Image (cartoon, rainbow, N blue to C red; front, side):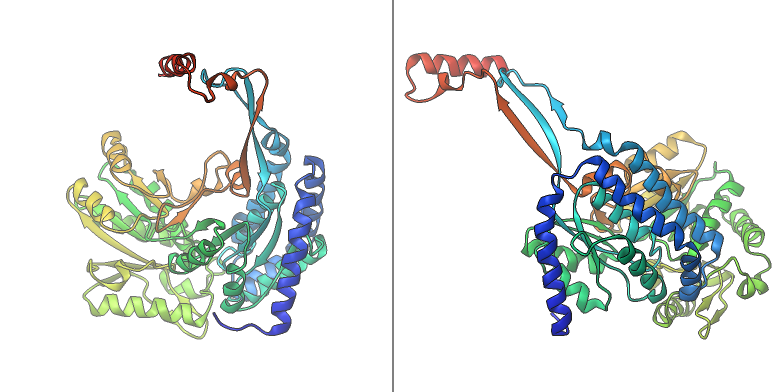
Length: 474
């Protein structure tokens, strides 16, 4: 483990201890008290919207409307959902007795997990920090937040909002590089909520295991798109272009690669070109388009540039785009064809505006290709042939899936969001976010259960009762 500044380490340790003590008090907090706290946060959040816009622009030139859709709307809608449903979520759930335990009453109580850690990423810094924080507070926990160092302006606004809203014993924030995150993840938190890459997620889970802390891991992976010959090509292209190039492709559920049926391959490439032009204008003007953001760091730019160069050197062709500018961290929306299956771009999550487009002949071929890779965070299939679509869904595994749409499932409050294995562990969003930060505690109360009738000594009468119980319950 990298060593921290001793002063910062002491501050983290002190904050953890005061939160640990305060978490015991929070266990008795009411729905009204928790909602009052979230109302204070909502007020501070809304008062900071101008700063949010500026910070997102300063970090990687994100358009205001994109920030509205993917940050502000997401946070405010989650607050509205919690406000409407928290009382119901907190209510104990009564459970009917089984035949074996007739004479008892039982219920399930959702209690706070305790002291929680939220490690958030840079790509959607506000919604991927504040939504887990909202769930943690709604469930009655304390929280320590570690935002990304790669989006310093957004992280500064996040810190300002948190410090304006919360007492440190309830919610605290610590800035810094990976050494801060590493130190925090090795502490005995009751729950860790991490959003980031699968590689880092493995380290987080390993650290949590030392303390037997529960984890929610929202990771990523190579989310595939299958375009069947029965698909509405215009609708498919429009959806793919929007969800792929939103935030410059820096989205965990963005389409990572396309598999297009060979009979419509050329026609679909033309449709993609038209959709790109409709959404972002002429190809030569991409660099000046105010609706198209930039990459977050020079290192991220170089990683993507290397993937692009490797693909070209391996025989891939550029159907659209391919232009780069290191000074402004710009890579144009780029569509690649003839990409080799063993190339780097087909074996690493892209997380940028590069889109490989491949052919397939038989749906089984496409399914096998997907199943030979780690389970993705999302899978998308376009087609009107229900047999084919159902075959794809039933024959593959992914965190979540959409049919004839991309990425919109993240906004659906009545659907759980999350990965599977390599793409994540646990679900979040709405009630599932509340449950991620809650422990389901079973409580059984004895009313008139005749347990003493089956205790030792095991007389013939007791043996007959046990046999009768087995017969009754089987």
